[in-house]
Image (cartoon, rainbow, N blue to C red; front, side):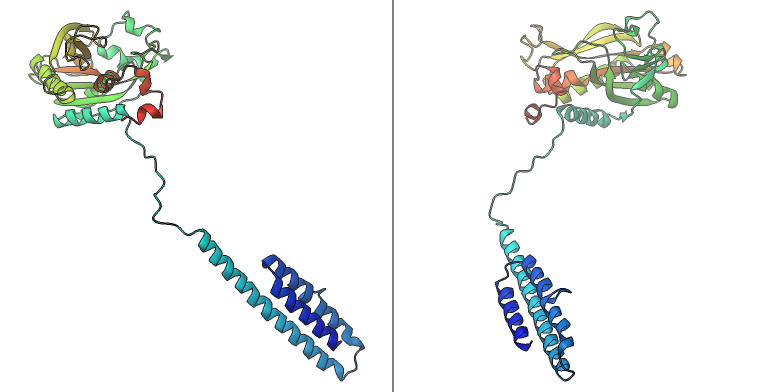
Length: 339
C-alpha cells in the first residue's frame, strides 16, 4: 500500500506540472483528492491493515494529501498570475497612437439663427415668452380680430383637432395670453413652431417656425416699429442691408406693412432667388389694432403698440443661402455637418 501511495503521489505531481489551465488543475484535484479520488480509495483499504500499521499508513496518506493540496494551490496561483500578465500585455494601450475621432453634435442652423435673434431682441429690452402649440379658436383667431368668414379659418389652412381646438397657425396667440396676464409696458418676443395645411415644396412646409414680437406702452408709434425692425435687419444681414416697408393688410394690425431686405444672393441686382426684384420679404408687421388691445383689457385710448412676425425658416434659408426649406427638416447629416 505504501508503494501504491508513492506511485499515486508521483503520478499526481507529474500531471500537475503538465497542467495547462485551471480546468485541468481542477480535474486533477477531483481525480486525486475528491470523495471518489485515488487517495480516498487508499484510505478505504486501511481496514485490512493491522492495528499497528493503520496509524503509520494514515499519517503517510495525510502527508501526501497535504502535499498535493499545497502543490495545487501554488500551481493555481501561478496560473492566475500568468493569465493576468498576459491580459495586461494584450490590453496594453499605445498612447502614441492617434485617438479615434469622436463625432460631436452641433447646433441646427434653425437653432443658431433663433439664438442670434433672441440675443438681438433681448439686447433691446424684450422678454422671451412661450405659449401652447394646441390653441383655442379664442386665442388664435377671435382675440386677434380675425372675423368668422376670414379665409385663415378655413379647414384647408388650419389643422382643427375639435370644433374649438386647433394647432396654432401663428405664435401671436402667445401675445394675447401675455397681454391678458401683464399690464403695460409690455415688450416680448414669442418664438415657436406653428402649423398650416400647406403643400410641401421648396419654400413651404406644414410645420414651420415663427418669432412674434409685441410692444405695448403709452405713445408707441410707427417710428418705433421701423427703428426696431431696421436695427434687427442690420444685425442679421449686415449694416449695408437696405430695408423697405410696403403697405399691407393683417386683421390684427392697422396700419400693416410687409418688410423686405435687399437680396443676400445678388445684393439687390436681381436674381433667381428674389425673382429679379432685388428684394426678399422677411416679415409682416404693423400697429396693434385697437380691437386686439380692447379684447385683452387694455384701453386703446391710453395705450398703443406694434407687433411683427418673422418666419424663422425663411430667415435661415436666406442667411445661409439654402435653396430648399425641406433640408431643414430632413436631418441629413451631410447637410447638417456644414454648419
